[in-house]
Image 1 (cartoon, one colour):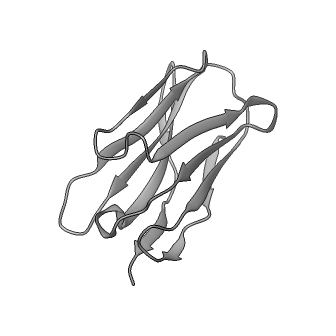
Image 2: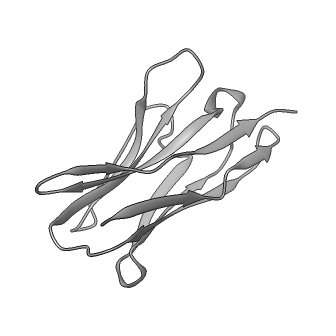
Length: 115
């Protein structure tokens, strides 16, 4: 059974950086893409970034130029490098994995951007 475990969240000052990781256990067979989503208090979950098996990426408009998504296929791990963080980036960040037959979610990791 596939499990997604996020790590790397925490408290950071505005302008700072964090790197999130998502480790996927189990088989990567039929995995087509992975991504990060986030949900701020009182708001809907939104796309942060996705990366396909071919390495193509797509970013939410508010993070373009500041965040970078990447994958290490050998380790079944995905990363999100977040730079120039803003208070509005505060949210729970969720790892997402799309398979041909299902979509899996991690439990989330909290990122707080505050002085």
